[in-house]
Amino acid sequence: MQHYIDTKKLGEILEIEIKKENLFTKAFTHRSYLNEHPTYEFPSNERLEFLGDAVLQLISSEYLFGKYENPEGDLTNFRAALVCTKSLAQEARRLGYGDFLLLSKGEEATGGRNRQYILANTFEAVLGAIYLQEGLETCQEFVTRELLYKADKIIEEETYKDAKSQFQEEAQEKLGVTPQYKVLDSWGPDHEKQFKVGVYLAREEYGVGQGSSKQKAEQQAAVKALDKLTTV
Image 1: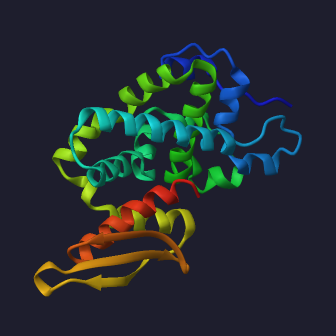
Image 2 (image 1 turned 135 degrees about the horizontal axis):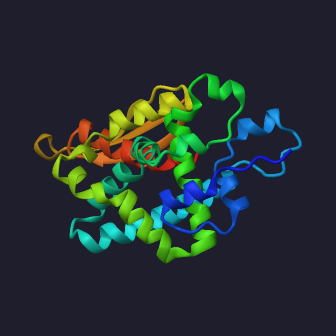
């Protein structure tokens, strides 16, 4: 039995002509689907997700570097807010990716088509597929149109500053673990004190941040942790 997605409809959404149907079918194949279909001819979308993540990091970094004159720390925060699981899932949901997903019956029955981390991972997998078929320039056009359009709003509303809330939400949804913060070091006089804080999931360090208060250091640690969590 062969299982394919509606590539004509998908091509209209992505604004490209899909020539490699197998490639885009892989992009929507969740690993749970393989468990119920042992003779299914394609692997899951995890390899494409890995590639798409790298493409997304490059495109978003180049875009932010060229558009904003902010220092490195700010650009890192902007990027984290744009490419975090919640943000990517919002765009995948808007584009209707959930309708194309190939899921197990169990995953579908528990709301998998609307699950945040599945949609976010699929956004990256589809980007990986676009890259392999069309190349980097088309990926840049796609990401700019479908994701980076909200960069100004994120920066204007300073939503990028609440990295701790984003990290907690994503860590709980993806791994079922609540982040723990620990002060690793502090130095300087009281009026110029600096703090170094680490954030941990089940004793594994996910990020280290530094700031003039514990809260600022925790936010910076959460930004670094969000970057790491996208690769899990």
